[in-house]
Image (cartoon, rainbow, N blue to C red; front, side, top):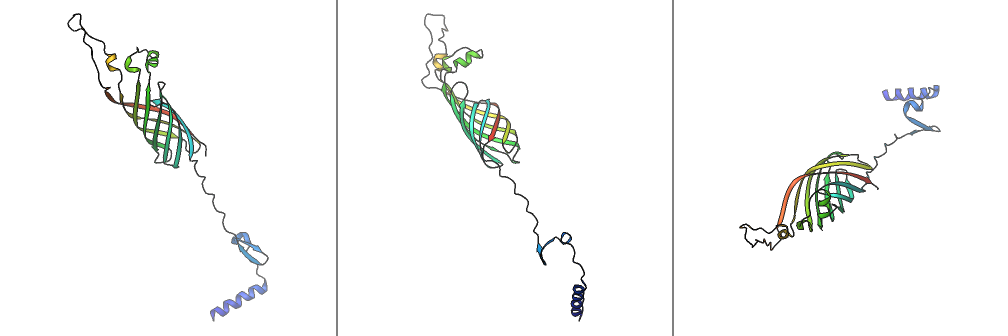
Length: 214
């Protein structure tokens, strides 16, 4: 009975000509006499971060390094490249973790420089020449904390921490002068039959810039 009454009232309203609410008020668009539902516009998806880039940095003991870098995720960066410590050529590879995608970072790197003559550089900075510097090379491992500024196209960073250096000392016997402990005509000559290895740990710092190209 109640349903019959409501149907009769609706029919009467149509016959009398009660106006429908405007389309703007109902969120509907009309096409002729048929209502058309307008779907809300979708928000544009965020742009993907560039993945491949080039990096240049300078520091100790890294020297001057140019690298290719890959960012598979915003919180991981891989790099590999080569450069010079102004004595010889070398290479370095590493990984950088950025938990927030930008800002605080942690880097772990391994690099190696081939043997080269360090005497010209030693003379420029005020040290004398030495046979032990004629073949000077080393390998190193960095453990750095730092800050990375920027996230899309350009990133500037400053990293610092500790470095473990290792290498061999060549021509050590020629670097030790002969001595005469008893003021006699004879002298004592030191002979090193095998080049000794040396390790050292110290502070490390570097500054760098990354430009992402695609």
